[in-house]
Structures are given as structure tokens and as C-alpha cells.
Length: 348
Ligand SMILES: NC(=O)c1ccc[n+]([C@@H]2O[C@H](COP(=O)([O-])OP(=O)(O)OC[C@H]3O[C@@H](n4cnc5c(N)ncnc54)[C@H](O)[C@@H]3O)[C@@H](O)[C@H]2O)c1
Image (tube, rainbow, N blue to C red; front, side, top):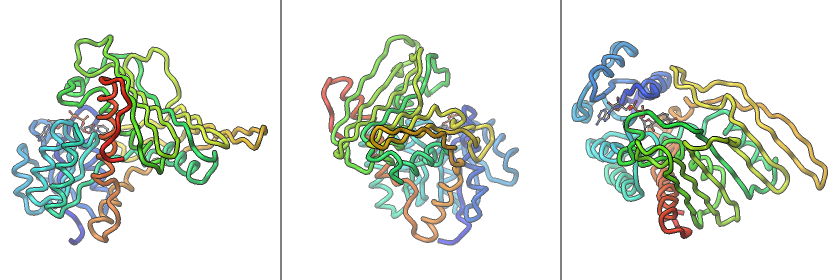
């Protein structure tokens, strides 16, 4: 394969400008070239043309599959379309980057992984938020041993509001309440804890927002073979909040309110910089506290990683197999919420 690699973005939606973000990341990566944007809605492809003059636009994915200049597609469409579109793209010989949530079930993830293997094409999941500034600092501190051995992680987000965004409210299309922010949080946890998952407990609540089919609150407790337990909660009925991150280790802890760590979709290829987290370190009973600045957000690095993989054989930035572990946790949490039992995951 030779640079520049021809790319098409499928899905140029208005809700988070995320099709724009993919097109902008591709355009900012010298070895990638934005060839086309496809969306079912012609108003959206007209918007893409204004944003990226000179590109081709399509309103039917079969035209993307037939375009010989497109070698890679990124799928920025609703969750329920990810698996079927990825299978079609791979069958047409295209490499695939798929947005989170990778798909709606482990069974779908496995189909996607096998299709990529059969077609000898890349399947990468867009877990870009590993490149958020606060997460990059957390990863660096944890890996550097700043708080000793991590045994407890809490991650929580949301608030008290009825989600308004179209298909995101419909469980059959979105996958449910856990599939919007949950994939980011579970990916962070699995990326941070170098251990196999031994069990998942889930607690789902449907109590207040009856006009939508998503759950109001979803929570997963993930137990790892090394003894670490992670507690991930997404809520739209949390009248009282808690920090985004609370991490405990044998020699300290990290507290992060996530202020200024939220992604900023308004036509920026990097999230905002700034913000800091509280690092507490303990030596016996001696304790010290320090506010540590976030690192910079470096989302474009993900796309350089895609080019490095396709052109020079570097590892896929986030493989389909890793993405499937994330979906496995979401699925096991839902099963556990129904059975009341600890559930295992098929891919630890
Ligand atoms: N990684 C992140 O931080 C992040 C942030 C926001 C959204 N996302 C993800 O991006 C994806 C899209 O979300 P969104 O908020 O942009 O949604 P959206 O509804 O704004 O956009 C989806 C677009 O896809 C188009 N579409 C649907 N089916 C299609 C098809 N078969 N062919 C062509 N176009 C089709 C729709 O017309 C729409 O314009 C989701 O997976 C979402 O979770 C990720």
C-alpha cells in the first residue's frame, strides 16, 4: 500500500459534528487523503462539500464500495448500522475504522473480526478518547507506579436529564443507555488494567424517562484476575453527581473531576487543553497532595497510528478484538442486571 491512502467518511451527522471530525482528522494526516463523504441525507453531503471543497459525495454506500480510489472507510453512523456496514465495506475490500460503540453485541463483533480476517483488511475501533489529556496523564501516573498497585477504579458520568438526540434514545438503534459513553469508560478501564476480566455485575434502572427506550441508569462492576475492581456508571437520573475518576492504589489515589476534559466537538481536531487532577501519594502515614496538569489532548495521533499500521505494519491503534472486549463487558452487565448473578465474558 502506498501513501496517501484514499479515505471516505460514511455518516456526516449533525448531532456531534463527528463526521466532520473524522474528515478533519483524515485531512490533517499527511499520509491519508479524504476522497469522499457519504451520508443518506443530501443536506449533510452538501454540508460536507462546503466544509471540504473538492471531495466526492455519495448518498448510497454502494457508490463508496465501487470507488477504486477509496481504500479505507470510517463509519460514523448510528450504532445499529456499524456491523452491517462494516461487513459490506470489508467484502468490497475496504479497510474499516468503526466508531464506538463498535456494534450492538459480541456476536456482531465476532462477525466483523472474522470478515476482516477473511478479507485481509484492517478493522479498527475509534476509541479516540484514550488520547484525552486527563486520561493520558492518568495512564502515565498509573504506569509509572505513582499510586502503587491499582485495586479500585470508579468512573461516573451523566446527570439528571432526558436525552433528546433521536436514535440515541432508542435501545434497538443505540444498544441502550450504556452504549453512548459506556464504551469510552470501559475502554479506558480495560486499557488501564493489565489483567483478565473474571466477572461482571450489572445494575440497570428504568424509572423516570418512559418516552425513551434506553435505560435511565446503567452500572457495571468489573472484577479482574489481579483483584482490581472497576465501577462504571452512566446515568440520566443522577440528581447528585460524583467525580469522573476516582482511583485507589496501594500508595495513593487519583481524583479527577474531568473539568475541561470533555471533548469539544465544535470543529476542533483536539479537545481543549488545561485542567488538572488531584494526585495523593502516601508513604506509611505521611500523605502529600499535588494538582497535576492534564497532558494535552492528542486525538490526531489515533489517525497517524492508522497510517503507521497500513503503511509500515505497526499495530492497529485499537483492534477489533479489543473493541469486542468492551462490548463483552456492556453485554455481560446487561445480562447480569437481568439474572442478578455475576456474569462471565467470552473474551477476558
Ligand atoms: N468517539 C467519540 O468521542 C464520539 C463522539 C460523538 C459521536 N460518536 C459516534 O459517532 C457515531 C455517529 O454519531 P453522531 O452523533 O454523529 O450521529 P448523527 O445522527 O449526528 O449522524 C449519523 C449520520 O449517519 C447517517 N447515516 C445513517 N445511516 C447511514 C447509512 N446507511 N449510510 C450513510 N449514512 C448514514 C445519518 O444520515 C446521519 O447524518 C456514533 O457511533 C457515535 O457514538 C463518537
